[in-house]
Image (tube, rainbow, N blue to C red):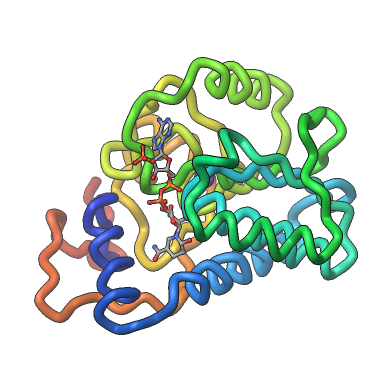
Amino acid sequence: MQLVTAAEMQKIDNYTVETIGMPQDVLIERAAMAVLEVIGAGHFNLEHILVLAGLGNNGADGVAIARLLYAQGFNVSLQFVGNVARAKDTVQRQLAIIEKHGLVRAEKSDFNQATLIIDAIFGTGLNNILPEGLQKMIKAANHIEKAVIAVDTPTGIDATTGEVRGAALKAHTTVTFGYNKIGLTQKVGGYLSGHVVVKDIGLLTPADMTFSQPERLENDTTD
Ligand SMILES: NC(=O)C1=CN([C@@H]2O[C@H](COP(=O)(O)OP(=O)(O)OC[C@H]3O[C@@H](n4cnc5c(N)ncnc54)[C@H](OP(=O)(O)O)[C@@H]3O)[C@@H](O)[C@H]2O)[C@H](O)CC1
Ligand SMILES: [K+]
């Protein structure tokens, strides 16, 4: 199994979009469908699903997940985390589409009401310590021990090192795209990621790609 850094994953993303010509929105849709497969696998109480979406492509995945759940008749709430005006265009497009589906974003959510939280706040683009307010929200969410499915990475975990950037959501399951990330297998990231499911969403890897970590053989037990 090949483990990758955040930068290596972003290089593969960019190659797939820029060189291969796969539209980003298609990758976002496939990422969302991959998470729905895990949500629907029967291990979670789906009575009230709360999706937390951030301002980057991780958030775009989250809004698409909320839309797919809503379209299938689930009781789903969507809370945007951050300043919508600063959101990437991928997120803006997803928000416009979900609005036309009739789903109105929640301004504030009571985590206690949710039976499952979908963490789509930050993924491999995390590049700094989390804002204070978000750290508080994450610590409160961890305290009530709700079931959390993390999209790509648990928010607050550095995808390359596994270190915590101020605070990090504890996930029951992490659905990560393309390759597993080094940060989901070591340090606190190895613990907070929970059960990691790697999903293929159609990413192509450049033939000349070099990785910082050697590929581990499937039954390789070395740490
Ligand atoms: N692998 C793939 O092909 C696909 C991945 N997808 C998803 O995309 C994310 C990565 O998306 P990205 O937009 O690069 O980053 P994030 O969504 O993780 O972060 C969003 C932006 O937030 C800003 N940021 C980062 N850290 C902080 C912080 N500590 N506090 C505040 N803001 C922060 C940062 O913006 P800057 O302007 O600061 O650079 C980030 O850009 C990946 O994880 C997948 O979920 C695709 O959707 C599907 C294909
Ligand atoms: K996330």
